Image (tube, rainbow, N blue to C red; front, side, top):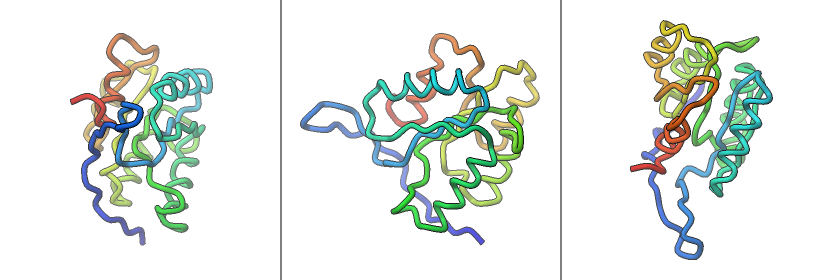
Length: 157
């Protein structure tokens, strides 16, 4: 059985030396998407913000579930829980919907998730949000979509 402690909400602080915004949750930002080109583009954009959080790409939902399981096995101090998951809805192995249901059962719904997809099926997007996704970013991204990621990280007040 998985255990977790409820985390305090992420807070934005200002590093006195650099003036760079930081996030108290030092966990990684995980981009879970089987579209490697999209994931690497998004990884580059987020990395350019200069956050202390590493940005990693996982190819599917099974890899994310394995990552999160390891967090509990070795302890969050060795492999911290993610600060944010950007999760594709349509992937092989485990879909975004499968992962959202797993997160709920594992009592990890406190980890912020943003759904992404090239699909225009509103039912899937609504279902992701009912399962706890904070927002949705379409592929291709449009104006303001990166702000959804900043907001989920606590960088926009």
